[in-house]
Image (cartoon, rainbow, N blue to C red; front, side, top):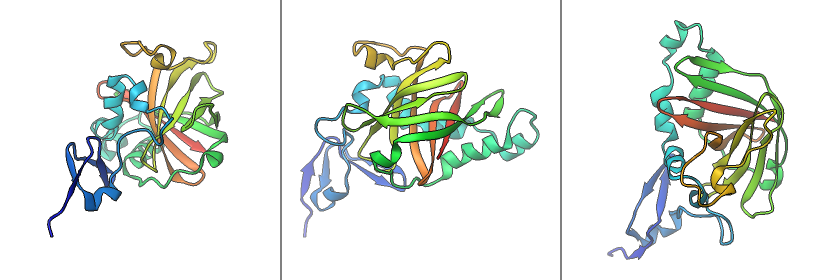
Length: 229
């Protein structure tokens, strides 16, 4: 029996963590397995309509970009500036299989967060500081804020059709600058990212632990937040 087809210009299928995009037609028999790349529900903001195109591209390619940046175990062994624990956490961010996201209620509250910073200079791990995830007045979004430490981040976490990832768009600042807003949230007509703009992908490895991979740039480096209850 021949298959019938349905048109869906944004249809995509997730297979072992990879999104397979079918831009024109998909078999109607498989349509239940396809996840349109759009907001979670009607009435929610779609993160790609907010993100700068550069950031949207980087978010889509963060794993391949990170693979190209991280040193090998042999390089780490011979380096005095690569924290072995930081390398392990970076490798885990690439290799771990995310679990399904908790509900908004379970996500909200106080968290401990530490930063892993990687670059050509090495990999460095910083102590745990205070962070909070809280409700937002917009459906499908949560607020994230790293509240202590000299380097701060705050912004919004966006749910998507993926049940295992949240997209983060926000601003980064020092403790004396106060909170900064993602430039396109402050001005929808902003045509280029600012130095304070920051993006990330957050996923859970256990019910009380998450990793957020941020600002992976091929010529600069990366950051990771490890969040724990």
